[in-house]
Length: 355
Image: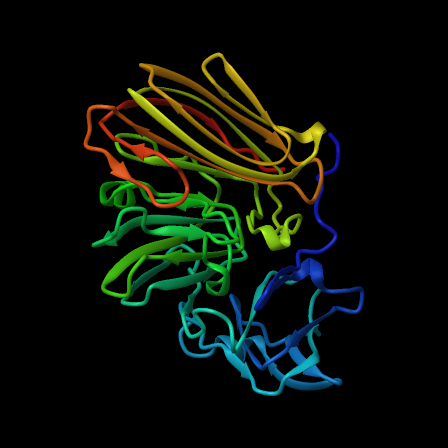
């Protein structure tokens, strides 16, 4: 078996933020970062051996950055604008962590950051529009959004709160209805996810750290597939978060009257094209583009197959199951058409492989 393909580093750069992980540390256990206007840093783990330094002087460590509740890290403010801050590992090699540094002038600055804990996860019950989740685990599982959502919300972006907008970044999930939001439980293999609830009022969702699992399918639901480490923004195309997952493989059959598909892919090389088949319609995603398709059939045989061949490739696919007999539900960004939902029955045969 050939060796898995991983990026040489995992650094993902946004206009007002950066995300770093263990592969970004050099041979001396160091990785630099800048705070142009002063910044705030968040991490997903406590670790006294992971330090923040400047000119060799220790400023703080990951324990102090988390502080307070591990479910909602307090963060640490770096008041002095500078370009010579460092993460330094003074402990064992290859520590797991997600490090999110965001500029004081970033959009949505002040939004809260959350970290699911082992098997208990975290419940986000707030009135804030945005919530950012960090995790070094294999994937994040979102369970049961609740709130008086507008059409097209909530949305999930593989970014921090600073870049949670469809102007430059493709949502990995966009709810099609309130029922869809309550019953679609996306599992996403990415280190950072921001929920845009669409409004600032009471709403909640539970988030768990979990292994990649069988996507839930059924009446009025959506199913989401992404390449591991997906980011999905035009300004940092080719950058992905670190992930040990290297494959997505699924084949299933479902009975439904309607199927709507929305996909975006970037930097997919020819030898690693994403194979996506619906019945006898075979599509190969290669290069950089978007894909939208609508089907009115009785039964669908669907195949999604991809194996990472280059560190730069990424894709996201959302499938919406429904019926032409339901009331039309307008969406706002991801699909330039209406969507309808009706109960359907699903037979699933899933393999989600990890190397």
